[in-house]
Length: 382
Image (cartoon, helix red, strand yellow):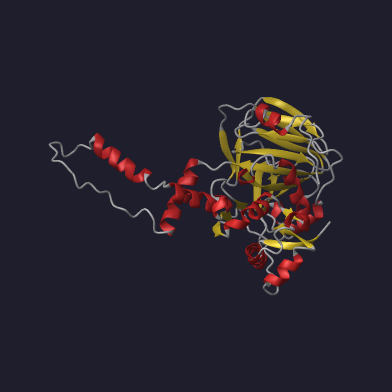
């Protein structure tokens, strides 16, 4: 397990001083850091259809970007290119452990774990992100420049690369293995590789209002909700037919706002936040699990959540037997809500944590269903 040192600040002190406020270099945030995956393994992942990958490089001094899968990299030479892998946590258990030290932030804010392999001079160019990111330097060395938040001009350096005009740096630092740089949204930055290196980025995203609105509209349509017509049975005669009166405007506004019924919107939110952002590496069991088998296995094995799977609950409805897994509302026996909290709060649970639940019929049945769907899987106790 990786141990995070936030410059000897408590997580709350770090959030108070830096989170969404200003960037900072965290020297030796991970002491004695060892890459959880090597360059050859990353290159192999980028050959897979289900893995989202891209190459960024320059050709005749022009930025280029290509999307995987890739068959080989021999034509790129030994300098000035980068390979980027999205959602590495979906495909590598070892790499996914890098997310664990950042669980002082709610998991619904997590975007993914991104990895970058880069040769000397390699970069994706100067840009601005709309998410918070902790960039953890692995092997090798990279120089990072970060500008102040403000008015910056962006332009398309390539159809797949949005860059920003040159900026003055408020941070200009070389990062070595174990160093971390935290960058909030809106701060322009650029990383340039000095020595062939790996880096790992833990990104935290907040959804825009328009993405929430679009998703909510889809939810209403898919569930045949929101079809109610505007009603005005007490309509009064108007002398100004071209006018939308204040009363009518409020009625129209109320019609729209009534759609954000708390129960409807909470279901949408749970489904929306747990919907997979990238393809999951689901491996279904050869045969369905029986409840008797699961009850026994829970006393000898741990259960681990699939990499990239999202499982959340609301603090005021979990006790009613509601949670959300992989984009769907899940209803369960309210008696097992404490155990379901454990499933959502922890990636891995071992027998000692589940001893009181291994013979509870409702919980065993729930775990059997999750195992059958490939959402959780069995692991040997460490």
